[in-house]
Length: 82
Image (cartoon, rainbow, N blue to C red):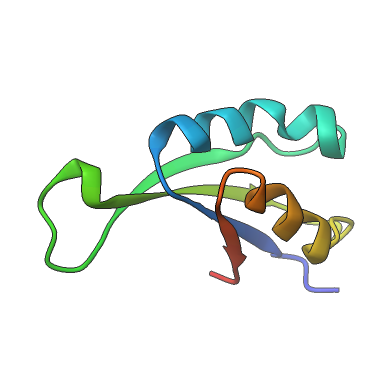
């Protein structure tokens, strides 16, 4: 597996991103601390029109992308490869 695997959870708002990040260790076990990043949509200045990203480092490649996608879906989100 790639040594620099990072998973990207795309979530609709800040609250969802914070909840997903806070519950990540409980669901998937210990690992790197998820980082939350605001991603403004192209051409949008309003903070309400932003997606929020949860970046999760997975250096050992142990996280299942399908499980991560299901986890993000619980907050009406999805996963992408950065």
